[in-house]
Each structure stands twice: as structure tokens, then as C-alpha cells.
Length: 304
Image (tube, rainbow, N blue to C red; front, side, top):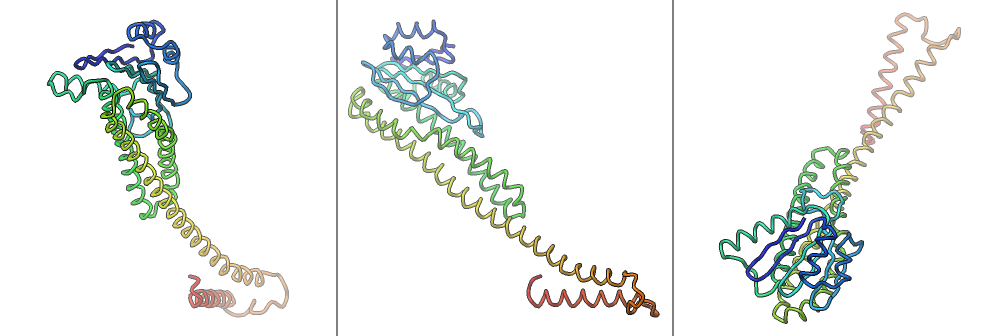
């Protein structure tokens, strides 16, 4: 599906799951390099930046930008950037690009479009919007971490093991997806200055800064998560140890009682106490006294 936007004298063509005919049409219209046209047919495995004649070709992978919670999936956006045009190609629906297009249309109608004299400004705004969308996802992760922290200290350590693991997965998904962006922007910066001039360097630096800001937030969240998981594990281990201590104490108490009961249940002819008046209550009293003595010892030793 092909969508075309005209912003002042800048053309933005957005292609979702493009057909061969659509690729052929834009290749002819914008005189794209044949190698770039071949790349646009199908998704690419790796992210890259390639200068091509009077254009730049970028392949970028982002975490899912359509949901509040990432599920480990990646979306690919291919950018073909010329002086007066920007072509974006993706192979599934991306709400962030759709929303950005609507926002640009509204600004254009109101004559408030921030687009500069070349397509580099449009590219800058689009990438910034993608990073802002990802930052919103990070804010959801922060909220989940705060909620998990409250639950940890409310005695729900066991349930939080699974919850914290899911949060960890989402953070790792985003960090893995964005890992190559730093090198990509370093590669793009030199070519971008050559194509759009030295003044555009400020915007290239701003893109890198937005990436670093996002990467830093993810790193900080990962550190918070690591500390929270450590605290949760410690609390869970402490609770488990306390349970084991109580069970062990119960075993210590019941063993001598069981032994006494076993001794007096033996069918020997000269078992002491057995046969005496009130022998049952005497044995019960003996067992109760022993139990009290054991609990007293445990209290004195601070085992309970």
C-alpha cells in the first residue's frame, strides 16, 4: 500500500508491504539506485547506512511501537533519503508512522509545518517521533516496576518472580533492538553533513542525543530491576528459611513425643507406668511437660 504526503516542496512516500510494481514505480520516479530498489523488496536482517549517489539508504529495526508492552517483536523501517524526498518502507502496519503522517498533515493545513528546506528535516522529525513513542513504552515499564516494588514489600514475593521476569524480558527486547543504533547514527552523521550541509549537524546530534537518552533510561531501568529482583529473591529466601526453621522445630518437638508414644505402646510385660491408676493422664502429662521444656529451650536459644 502506497501513501503519499506533500509537505511544502518535500515529498514523503510511505510504502507498507510494497508490491514489485510499487517498488518499480518509485524507483523510476525518484531514480533510485538498482541495489536500493532490490533491498526494498523484502526485509533485511541487519541494520545499515549506505550512501547511494545523491541519496542515503538506512535500514533500522525498532521494538514494537504499536503496543504499550513490547512482546519481543521487531519492526523494520527502510529509509531512502534524498534532498527533496523521503521514502519509508515497512512490512507491517506501524501506528507511529501513521500518527506522524496525520500530525504533519494537520500542521501543513494550519501552515505550522516545521519542515525545513530539505527532506533531512522531515527525516529528523520522524525519527524523533519514533524515539518519543518508544520513551512512552519505557514509562509503562517504569510504572510496572513501581507497582512490582509495592507488591514485593506487601509479601507477594513468590508471585513477583514471574512478573519481574516478564518486565526483564521487555527491557532486554528493547535494549537488543536498539543496540545497533549508536553505530548507525555515527555512520549516518558524516554522510548527512555532506548531503545537507554543516548546519544540519545540529539535528544529527539531536537524533543521537535522543537515542542516548532512551538507551540511558533503559539501562537505568535494568539496574533498578536487577536490584528489585535481588531484594525479592532475598525476601523469598528469608521467608522460605523461616518456614524451614518452623518445620524443623516441629520435627524436633514431635520426634520425642512419637518416641514416648512408641515406647508405651510396646506390648512388654513390665512397661513402667502402664497399668497404674490414671496411667493415660500421667503419660499425657509427661509428653506435655517435655513439649514445654523443648519450647522453652528453643525460645532461650532464640530459634523461635
